[in-house]
Image 1: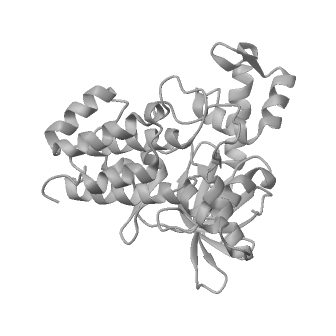
Image 2 (image 1 turned 180 degrees about the vertical axis):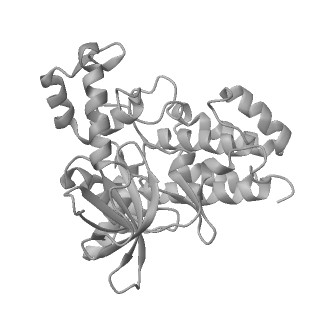
Length: 337
């Protein structure tokens, strides 16, 4: 990844597998310096490129073919290939269930338990569901998750495919509902605490409501628009308990609040605000600044859309919650909806 200049992907990977990064440092292949952070040693750059190419040829993006098995699951075809993982469409042995298999090219299964623990405790139509964790034929860790058909939200962040205000409003409401479910729910936690006894199910609900999670990497590419369910949050690789100490900031560049030094629920709201700003503007942050995107929104939508987005983008300063943003959205419904 470093050889190809994929700095942010490397940082995400490094957070999941810190021991492997330290091993690279001890080998002298990379150096840890404060400015600009972890860098590849020039001496080993060419060697690392050669090794990376060999590894890709041997264990590259299409290591599995239709008909191959991942324990009881059979591969149908390849869905996508990313910097450190491949995603396949799979079907159960009896043909009754279709799913998506995400195979990590390197690492260990225990490192993925964070994603499993996060999603295993949450049930919401706007959040992808994990079915199982296992190993592929080559020993790589694999997540089996529900198969969600649809395009990523990034496909709609263009002038020709950007949704009209009513659709944008509906998608925004659905995503805020999902964040409400993901983030701490203090009121619900207090209600459950009044119970004299708690069943295992109630205790699990109380734990989620009390603590909650932060996604930490909300962006158009991590949201799939399902025809039946609307937008669905995916890829929780770097999620953490809300309020838990985090040593590194590893969101995608541009989706974290300026000068952010800690992670909380407001960082998710800010990232969702940037994502919805791109969607409303029909343009991407890589092409325009935040202010330019806001101007483009003014031409495409009623004034209430800009007000909602400004509220979300100010979340690191205001401390507003997803529930409060949702209530503001309902109260300030854009004209014509």
